[in-house]
Length: 237
Image 1 (cartoon, rainbow, N blue to C red):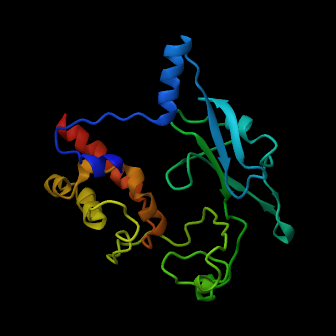
Image 2 (image 1 turned 180 degrees about the vertical axis):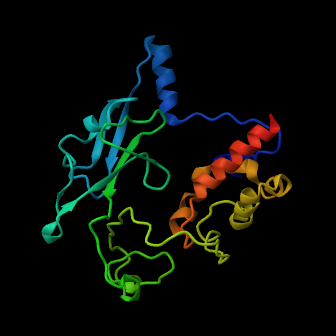
């Protein structure tokens, strides 16, 4: 996003980036003369009994970060039985699903724990007023409630994949001066000329995270962008 605003990338150009955490690692190397990969990891999400920062080493086990914060296999959810959770290495919008036996990924400084949603069964949920449900487009009546209302959002997709609906819903949440819907269609068709004209070199998959969250078509937008960038790289090399 910063690069897009400061100096957009054009064909053939290379831009190097470094994260704030990596600057700290480099500083430790030169000031202490050791490779210290310790970092602060944020444990977040509605299903963590205790959120906050944990000091950890890159590549540590997920289990070591969640001990005492998230039950082992799930927990009782009233009369609905066991409630399972989804663990994400990274943030909830662009992170990667991992298991307790997995490891903290090299570029992540956050672990998110949210409800899986497999214990929820709604009868004709699509015709209900939707009180208590979050909606980007104000489909449910929840928007009449307080703007300070907090939501617990689970990992359910709530629908199946369908054709891309040209409704300009991506434009409302996309942070760049690019036409995301047209770019996605060009990527799917692998029309290199259109991809270049529509700004393929200026984007990264995570730039489309909010588009994927708000998408009524339920398609994996970030994966489409990642595949398009990979294919374009192979084509140019």
